[in-house]
Image (tube, rainbow, N blue to C red):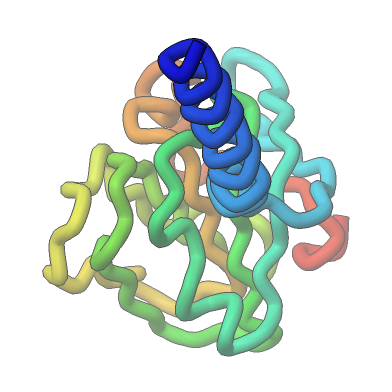
Length: 158
């Protein structure tokens, strides 16, 4: 009888631990805020994404750090409020990303494809941008997104 009780207590403790871990892990893993619609107009037609928009310095600094998953139709848009040259790095970022550097009028001026996870190498905008869109690595190639394509989102006046 003692074995049965200790097994039940052990099982109960394991279940409680798992439940507590899920309560802690799920919001951290999701780590997602509210989404806004963004469309990239390509030669093959429009490509729609749901994006989190990072507007503050604190949000800019964190970005997609520590995330382990990004859905294929999701992304993160960095809004700098004014055109400027920027540089990004992949410190504490586990996912390879494509970074689309976007001018004030919404056209893509540079694309850094399949950036290296965890790298501290600076990835430059190569010109003044109002925003940067991060999507899963390989997305630009897979969807035919090119320099010159137009991004439609309210921060670009569209």
